[in-house]
Image (cartoon, rainbow, N blue to C red):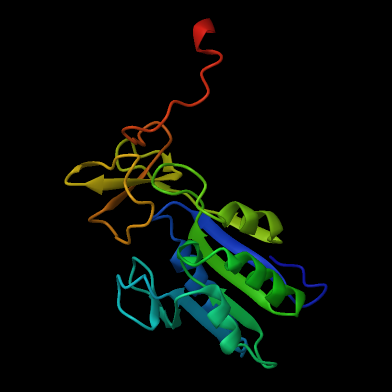
Amino acid sequence: MYVRQREGWIEVITGPMFAGKTEELIRRVKRLEYAKQNILVFKPSIDTRYGNNEVVSHNNNRTKSINIRKASEIMQYVDNDTNVVAIDEIQFLDEESVEICEYLADHGIRVIVSGLDRNFRGEPFSFMPRLLAIAEDVTKLSAICVVCHTPATRTQRIVNGKPASYNDPIILVGAKDSYEARCRHCHQVPGKPATYTRFEDHE
């Protein structure tokens, strides 16, 4: 439930792959369409998994969208009649995404975005921490770990049937053939530097 005192704010839907982020974004867009809101939906042109000019969830729900290469292109489409801007897979855009979202919200537009909070290494994904910090509303979804079936908060990249190395490229667009949802304990990143070890001598 959102309390609207003034027009213009930012909503972020985040979590690992297969958590239903795009599904939730489409659900919100559809509700706003019923309310006769003027909505612009964008997605990065790098995401071609389910075709162009549509945002499509893993459950095959879809809505029309505009393909963009960088965040500044959004401003070519926004006008005085725009009520809502929605962006799927925002982590694939550039750092200017944060400033664009802030600008739109400051100027009375409801901004709804979905994106991964962590990359396949389990580390914060690019500018997403900044976006989460400035958002009025954050919905963090979880998936189901394919190994132990507990809540999954991380995305496991698979290459040739094995966990991807830490040194692999950060961005590799793929779906079930390349990624799995994993919990903290089942997530594997060969070659990842050791985490904080100060207390290990006391175990």
